[in-house]
Image (cartoon, rainbow, N blue to C red):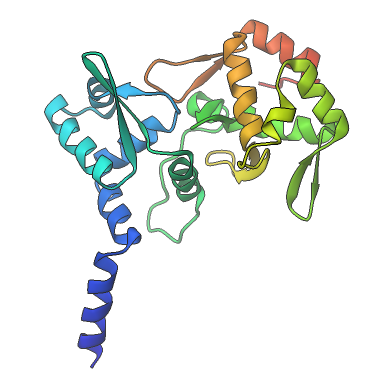
Length: 240
């Protein structure tokens, strides 16, 4: 009876999204590929092959499986094909999976807090790492965001601040996507903000040269201009 029940359960799981996603992410190279794409930027197959340390032909096979699983999408661009995480919902799922602490025999390898990816990185479309959690705290300290019942809310003062910064808060408020959401940071094990407002803030910081992206990596670099602007506008206290 037990064997029959297990057989039915196994057949049911084969058709589930859990089975599809676990099969796609179970390979270390494919897991590294989606991690690289969590920068939110598009990459060619060759760039991903170099980032993951595999041959281009090997990467092509892995990308096909990730596309079939609905985790990655391809965008033709002339003679090239660029690959991205399939959607923001997929990116959110992958980030949350990365943040889980499970009773493992060996803990996951995380970047050193405060350096490299642990210092500042993009999680799909918002800022994470030490910079992300410090920005989270700055928004609370300046009372631009309040948290009620575990839900972050932009205050009137916060709306005025981001509008003055050049971010169209009124437009963001019309989107189906939440303006603010709390995420547990993968490396810092503290909260950072995600949502349409942090996404717009990351775009603003890159467009205005406060931050620079490292080629083919999620890592972000704070420029000297960025440090000055963060101190001036966010009342940031750089201790690193």
